[in-house]
Picture 1 (cartoon, one colour):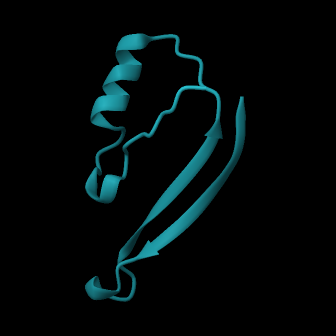
Picture 2: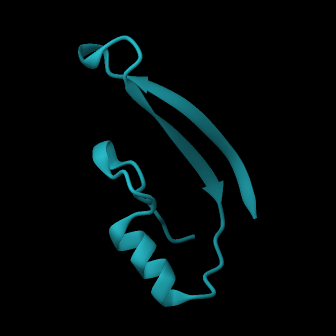
Picture 3: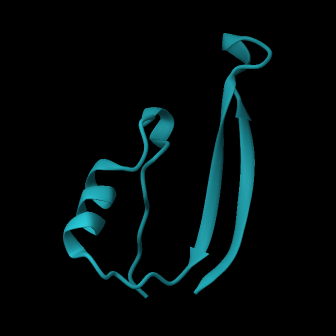
Length: 62
């Protein structure tokens, strides 16, 4: 079940006018069906970019 979410653009003014990165926040509940894949994503992130915490997940217990 996925609830609300939000998208944000974070400008890096010191790097130039168009430099920056996007972030997406989701809220909801997650049902884990493959514990090994979940641990890999949780501990190592998803995607190639990990700068500024991008690709990392914050998971909380219900």
